Image 1 (cartoon, one colour):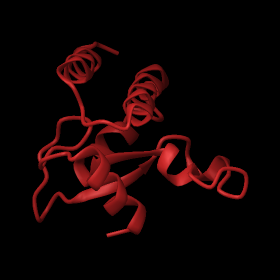
Image 2 (cartoon, rainbow, N blue to C red):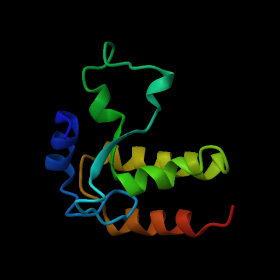
Image 3 (cartoon, rainbow, N blue to C red):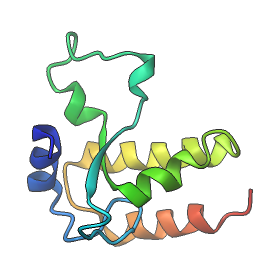
Length: 110
């Protein structure tokens, strides 16, 4: 596991669920999600906390889920990433409000 992911897990205490609500397991472990894709640049030289500020705790299934919209529903992809960024900025575990927003976005028709 990447050190940044370990650090985020200590901060956010996800309790076996990623930030999109997917249960983790040995077959579906936590992974680090770049909110702003790494292909657009790595700004760690300008922000020493860039990896922490640009990260989300997703599972492998959560990663597949969010990236499934990248080509097919860019609006939903961006909404989910904005929600992840919003949670990241709190430096606190997900709240009931976060889970309601996740559910709303996941249930939206494309």
